Image (cartoon, rainbow, N blue to C red; front, top):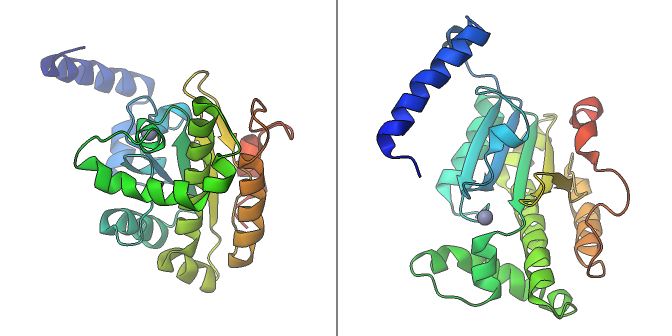
Length: 238
Ligand code: ZN
């Protein structure tokens, strides 16, 4: 574990490297940020948004919290969504969960962690909502994996139902909400298949994603075929 001073040294080297690669890099960034994407992910240090999707600073607007939750009364998250859509004009909101999420596991195993339990209570609600489906899985690891997926599905729905997103669609804005799950073991992102491009997409796509998260144990999430992640740019947001 590097000490804090080491980070400052690293930063100098990084800044130097970036300027060597692209002399105008910082000059352009100072001018204005024009990200196309808003990323809502977990604070987990193993899921760095920019890096895993190969984007440079300035290309993705990021909001992270424990267990990638979108809570309708969380002014922090709602402000990030509002700012990204209305001021930065992003066309894609990506909610990203990850397997091996400690927040989700704390709920699944009913472990008490302290103050954060109040925040994780939102995942407990998800586990109660999907208890019949979760009960179909006898082993703890599959339950953990599927609770990660059900949590993601609910958070994507929360984004799509937020007043900010509903108003953007009503105003004719091209905006897509995506739900992806990141695998810590191989660094691959998986599409939950519930991309929502208009209000009418929400519930049919929600049902499909819930069906996918209820698949038999042992089946990978993208058993239906290659992930749609690679098609994102070609498809466009609407
Ligand atoms: Zn996490």
